[in-house]
Image (cartoon, rainbow, N blue to C red; front, side, top):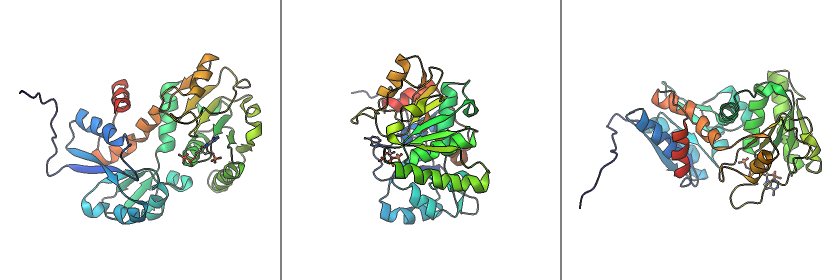
Amino acid sequence: MTTTVTSRVTITGKAKLAGVMGWPIGHSRSPRLHGYWLAQYGIDGAYVPLAVAPDRAEQAIRALPALGFRGCNVTVPLKEIAFRTVDRLDPVARRMGAVNTIVVDEDGALVGGNTDGFGFLENVKAGCPDWSAEQGPAVVVGAGGAARAVVVALLDAGAPEVRLINRTAARAEELAADLGADLDADLGAAGRITVVDWVSRETALDGAALLVNTTTQGMAGHPPLDLRLDALPVSALVNDIVYAPLETPLLAAAKARGNRVVDGIGMLLHQARPGFRAWFGVEPQVTADLTRFVLEG
Ligand code: ATR
């Protein structure tokens, strides 16, 4: 029997190490994503899945420098634990209250960042290059961790208003109060977040330049997001951060009425760029071939 070897593991004893820590971690596409870039750029490095239970996450994060790791990504449900564990926070992670990227500094300190908002913005800009946050009000549906990253990114990018809609109003109020207080202190721009009741969600679309779904609705196995788009201007851009399926019922409905749409896979791909650059020393590119490869996995 002949076997064709199409690829080889090429790491040496000097390989640069990183990974993704979460619980569970088996579903993560990040090892496939970083593995593609490592092979593409011929880097002597490895990016591995790290299945770490929440009660051992602090211990595992603290062990990164001792193990010689250059850092790691952190995913659900460990982002808040990472936030509390790292030695230093970058300003964006501090505002988001969560860390998704840890870099071990030259002195061995753990530096926590959050690139989810960067990934969101880069994805929307790549999908629709003439869009900019300043163009008009953004409507964000959801108030979980993903919504927090999206809202911070939109405000930092100059959105004049963010209308925040969540089924549970108290969660949206809390997010707005947290970010409003930060904005007051940091940017003098409080008041740009408007919390809209769930029952008024459809009228909140009036005059919007962007609509983003950050909820789990529309994901495979979940019902579609319950949101009629009649009041949304046809000029508005619609983005769903769900990427399985790639075309959610929300995006299909938006497309059918003539709105431009951007799907969610690029947020995952772009949020990975800063970590890869910090750990492996190369600025990686997001390409159509990479997107296909990650979606196939
Ligand atoms: P993440 O941190 O990944 O954003 P999350 O914290 O679980 O995830 O948030 C999920 C979001 O989906 C929340 O905004 C949630 O709304 P609630 O705060 O009211 O729970 C939203 N969501 C989940 N199921 C929903 C449903 N059936 N209708 C509307 N929103 C829903």
